[in-house]
Image 1 (cartoon, helix red, strand yellow):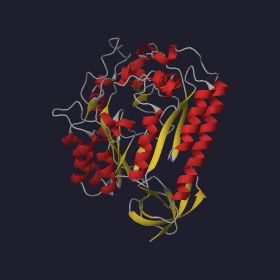
Image 2 (cartoon, rainbow, N blue to C red):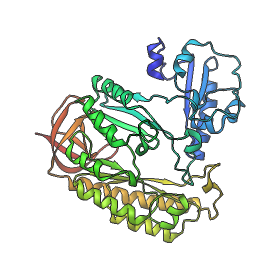
Image 3 (cartoon, rainbow, N blue to C red):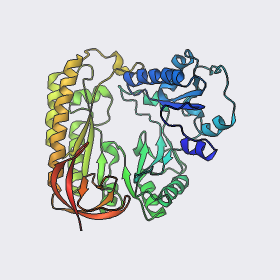
Image 4 (cartoon, rainbow, N blue to C red):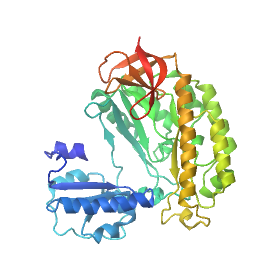
Length: 410
């Protein structure tokens, strides 16, 4: 939207300046995120009393009435495509007309493009190729706010990929709400593998990094392509959520711990340098100490390089919000702290295992470079931001935001 508005003559304002147009993309993945989104909407309306304040995104879709009561202009997901052009041309209504409630289904409109060339001083672009999810996990509101799975047609994806490559992107991250479902809704149906192959063939420059995939979506063909294609980053993020089969069943997750563990170990055997990450949730209603211990034990045994740990947050409108056995906040917080400590141990162990290796890396700002398998290296010599360099990885060192490796250009 920012790019489209810029092309129509609009310019962004700096912090502290008044605006003519404010667009807030809200989040509702947790109750806290929804509350913060509503607080931000009220704050923006106060700070920009003469501006047109437009609220959209997932919390606006889920709780439109909350924003309407504040006199804010609400736009649902079905209207997102082309919104920037409409806002740029149409005068600001005063007061904001209330939308027809409930809002149209989030998947009723056309696919909303999402791509971002590298910003100033950055090397990574983003390309959204999929939206929506129909998995209906017990704790998740996303299917209600984003709708059924939808895919960007292959030729459009390749066209945007070429634009990102021509813009100088050294790396592009493929994103989607449920990326592994890419292409299932197209005619004829496609899969993620065909998309990745087409993108890599469409432009010779950027390397490609995949965002989160479910364990069942990491097939042998994808692993073979990762092993054969240096531009496909050997980095996979595969959510686990719990190491307790009982809780996985309660969550509605379509796998068990044995399946997950076997697949992760197979990935590590096929790709010895791969960086594997996982999402872990603690504090789901009904989680007992034994369930948490099973999670801790399983994670410790797996070839994981990092963890994203989330305490469960009740989300009204989901089955989990009605589950009995709420875990006290201090207990969930303590469990999350234990797993984060385990995650730090895993990260340091993975980085240590890379010492002495020579890998290609893309130079980021401040003399740092990121390898395909997600190691951050501090370079011993200056190199141009966005350049691809070969680095011999040295000892583990402390970075500003994360541990890193000392790197020597070769």
